[in-house]
Length: 380
Image 1 (cartoon, rainbow, N blue to C red):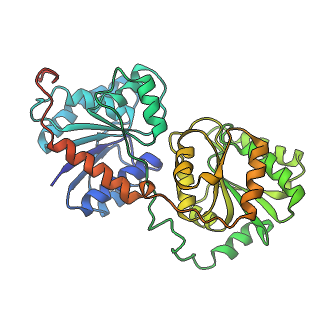
Image 2: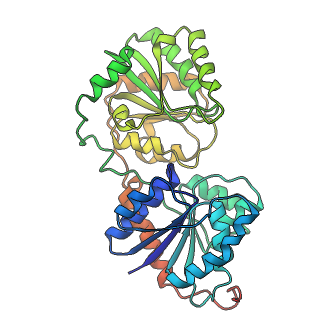
Image 3: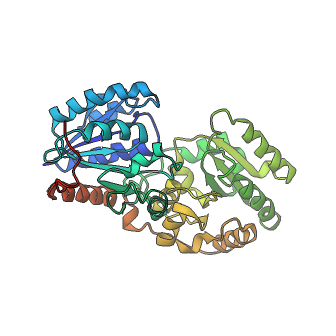
């Protein structure tokens, strides 16, 4: 049996937090001991209900005062004697590394990190590359690490894609009672229309402007099309939604675009969409919305850039569009609206495969002999 400690700033909401809970659940289900260290948050209750232990430590602050947590963390690691320490964010990664490196190399746990993003290139971010084994959530992230942090890497990053929970995102999951009528009651303009859905927070690089321009052209040809933009504005950037609404009005399609704001029922929006889009104009490390929609067997169209493109190449290459090519975007949309495509999610993008691959990595590291004394850092 393995004992695994995952460390992250907090357990509130987000992809890193969901990934932590997913892995904790998988560890418990397979008979291993799962511990999570964070500053706390609203997801702690779920974590503990699913069989993991949570330990609250203030490991979230980007402040020199956080260094006061190094000694308590080292004592805790000695007390718990885990097989694996898995860090998922930069502040906890620094604290954990400083605590871990002074432990006896012959007995200390193996140190793993997951690079969830394309971090800024500086010494602060380099900590994510300094663990014994880095997990990259896509080839895009792996290539970025090799290009920018090769001197810090102890081993080649291992790609383990983030996975979608196919128990949650599946066409076989029943539609909640009255969901469609409730949605149409809230957004009556969607009735008797084919929905083209762009999920993602409102941000200048997320492609909402390209989406609006495409809807403007498309509605000249097909009268039953309606664009749906799902997601809220970033903090202190609420004005961007007004800019987007003004752009839709400028194109004469204010009545053809619906802004839903943030939604907790995204699965049903995928289910009822004719097409789903990811139009980010700069590389994203992964792009969860792509695999969620594909798991719902809905065609996805996306620019051929970054992590989202990797998912499309593997699962639905018919949906790829040259980066920023609005003409090709319109053509691809018309093509897929005429087609009867049913995408299938590749197994490597499922939560089950993600958990299996991560657990196999843990087990391999736990079995390996400790690094030679020549490479080991001295203990206190």
